[in-house]
Image 1 (cartoon, rainbow, N blue to C red):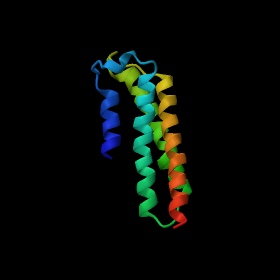
Image 2: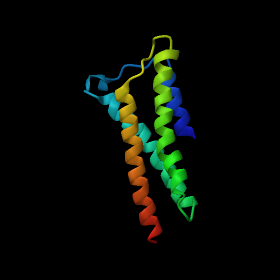
Image 3: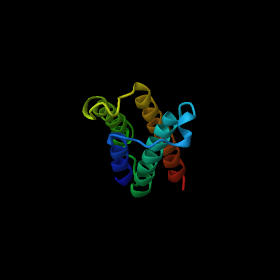
Image 4: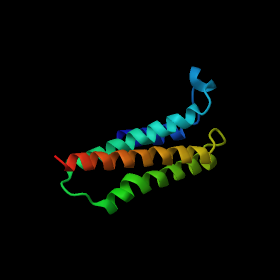
Length: 117
């Protein structure tokens, strides 16, 4: 929950400080992939280690679809509710979805390895 809250805060603050990495091409997209990928890998791992059986419908929704929908909502909020300080970006949504998808693939691999024990 902490990481998800942090994503909301970082996505909606009206300013973002400059960093030396700002000149790196697509650095913000890599950050999006890492934020969403890291956060939802943790979600998959938590689920794996706390459940004996997989509820694939639940994990499809909460571990893949809901985070992508959340990302879309955040992009819309950035575009329309930050007073012009932030802007929604389709490539950010794509990067977020990439991170979530990578987390789901890694999560399924972890589930498979864990179930073999």
